[in-house]
Image (cartoon, rainbow, N blue to C red; front, side):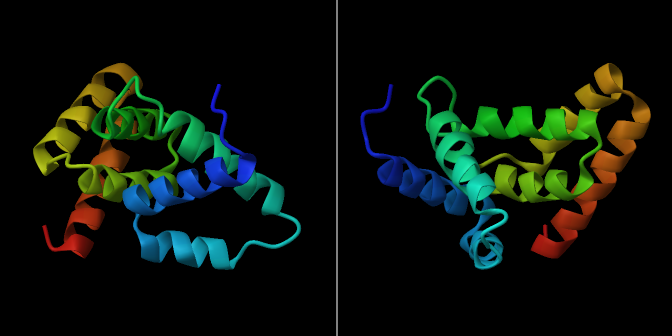
Length: 129
């Protein structure tokens, strides 16, 4: 178990979140924190972005590939676009992202892959790729 304080784990998670998703997106998201969603944001930064993303068992590229596949399978387009950006930030290539979505087509269905490829093309266009 991580012996650091909750604040230290929160800060480490927030740092990782900024590195993966981009500081601009995270700062905008953090600016909307209020009393209602603060407990969720604490959970997100501490457990998702620190306890999971900072674990030594998988590198960020692998975690990004897993997220792309899972978000595709669940049809979570908004989060998928966010994590396509994160995957690019973590060093995945367009070709590797395409390979993930081909796998999605077989295991999760063609409609999921169609939406995933569409989302990726939008992100690639936004990033000038």
